[in-house]
Length: 122
View 1 (cartoon, rainbow, N blue to C red):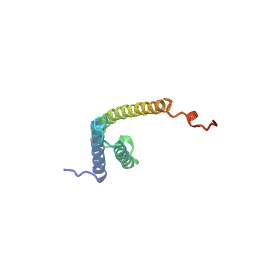
View 2 (view 1 turned 135 degrees about the horizontal axis):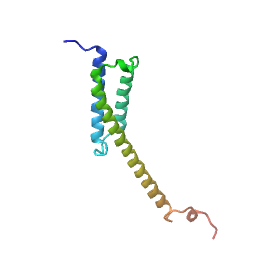
View 3 (view 1 turned 120 degrees about the horizontal axis):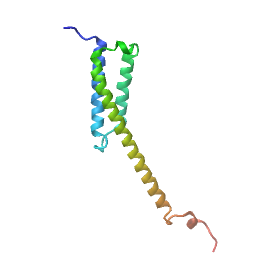
View 4 (view 1 turned 90 degrees about the vertical axis):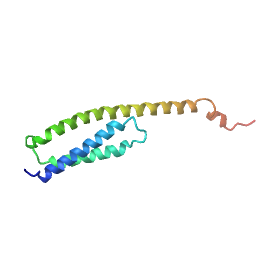
């Protein structure tokens, strides 16, 4: 039995970690109000950076075929993740617009208009 090269083991570990992070984010995004997307995004970025560093001197045709299936599955999950993150960001923008509109309406309800507080002589 051939032993895996250290770089192959590191690549396998990073790919596995990235897949877990993406699965977690895809499951919790939009469903768990306590989900920390900023932390999850930092973890994804770190894994992608590590993969970039591990593959930086490797020509695409020299990437071991043993990674092809795992990378294809990961690509599919990343595409789904991109759609979920985009939908989440659109929802956040929509809520922010609603809050801005509510704040603007509250300011314009006539209760606290500037001319009510201007000094005038009797």
